[in-house]
Amino acid sequence: MSKSLVQFIIEEQRRMPGASGDFSGLLSDIEVACKRIAHAVNKGALIGVLGSAGSENVQGETQKKLDVITNDIFIESNEWAGHLAAMASEEMDDVYPIPAQYPKGKYLLTFDPLDGSSNIDVNISVGTIFSILRCPDGVTNPTAEDFLQPGTKQVCAGYALYGPATMLVITSGHGVNGFTLDSDIGEFMLTHPQMTIPADTQEFAINMSNQRFWEAPVQRYIDECMKGKTPGGREKNFNMRWVASMVAEVHRILTRGGIFMYPFDTKEPGKAGKLRLLYEANPMSFIVEQAGGMSSTGRERIMEVQPNGLHQRVPVILGSKNEVERVVEYHKKGA
Ligand code: AHM
Ligand code: MG
Image (cartoon, rainbow, N blue to C red; front, side, top):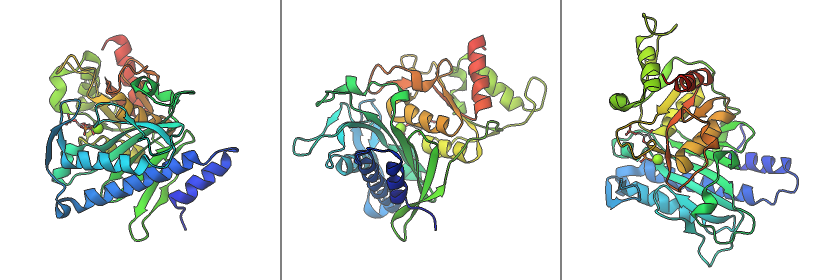
């Protein structure tokens, strides 16, 4: 019989002498949040949750009803237990302090409650991404400053994928484990122990409609992939995928390899990239590196970027090691 996430968490806790149980408790609350979100996403139009909320988030993006509902679910599930000092979400302008009626804990939680939400109305996979940081010592009322820790400081990161099956994939720095929700018993079961990303791949994922805005190194890399085994190309042919749901893309890469890129582009020169460092790039980079892959902005390791703002964006190039290394090499050469 495979192991449930609850059992996995308790066994992990036993491996850490002196563990208070706070971290295990927090992971259990996150698990409950993801189950509740899975339920809302799965019911969709039956419970009237599709469509626009008629509001905008801090980044000026139109929020879907489910962006707002899932953000509330994540807060409700995680604010009460005393494990957290504060939360920050892609969907909220500022830090969310733990309300006064609840005890405060030693961790900080950042999350994107429904990533890829442009896909929700068309019934394509979406996901939740989260990252756990330690609250700096002596801080009782964390501000945005306290969240600005490089990705190397993450204690744990994970995502839930709401696809044909609901999955939860997590790392706390000892490899990556994947769990599938068995809806008959309401438990996530360990189905994908120690996930690893093959170093080589013949599959890339990028939004090709931005091609004219890319820098020379990305132009060169994609041009060579497109040419494949013809002159000016590569030793192999490539296939392409673009789901426009980062969780689905990363999950595919964890399952069979691949390279995913949302690189710097000049479409909106004021923005360093599309994806957000604290809610998307750092947690996914932690998972990808723990699975033996690589993650870079093209110029530096994503997890070493010193964040300068809660909603900061970065270029993201991640996945199979040998391909990401090649793109980084092209950045070093300037093309
Ligand atoms: P979101 O957090 O507003 O959903 O945006 C993030 C998503 C990623 O999941 C995905 O990789 C990307 O945006 C797709 O962008 P585009 O629509 O430009 O292809
Ligand atoms: Mg997102």
